Amino acid sequence: MAAIVIFFGDAIALMFAKKLGLQNWEVCVAGALLMVICKVLKPKEASGSIPISMLLLIVGSQAMAGALSVTGAGEFIGGHIAALVKLVDGNSYAVGFIFFLIPFIMTQFMSNRGTMLIFHPIAIATCAYIGGNPVGLMILIQAACLSAFMTPMATSAVPYIMECGGYDQTSMIKQGLLYSVIACVVSVGWIMTLYPIL
Image 1: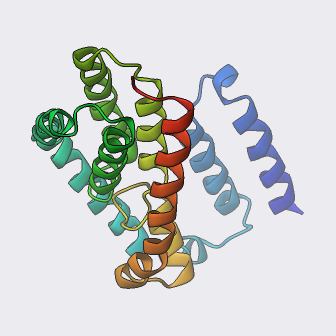
Image 2: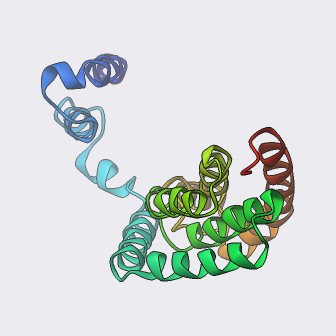
């Protein structure tokens, strides 16, 4: 009974977290502590249920993503994209493919939000350079970054999936490869047809 009360109390607290002046993680920690204080879980059970391997994977992937963002690797790659756009003479589908593929690959090694923040200004600057409309490229960057899930660095949900499902890195790549190709072809074809650059 106490667990049900705590669960619903936490759910209500999360809904009103901003009004309470708390962040979501603070409400979750308070709920976990209440489960121990109200003796729903014994301290040993609570500490034993923490998946340490998953936490270490998340911490490591966030550190790697942060390092790649801070070192300027994203800006370095962005400079080379502008040269590629010149090679294809502004063809919407070719430019769209470039702006899908490169953020998709980069998101495998750094966070999807960080990659989006790096590539949105590059897309706008590229379209300003060739006199095009950046809407399609912005949508493609979002699609690429949000569909990249083959490594734990892409988004924090991937380590949870790997831990709960017992997947390793090889199986994640095998299972995601076909989907990635389909997502690329469909996204570039559809978005560049609706929102061509020129």
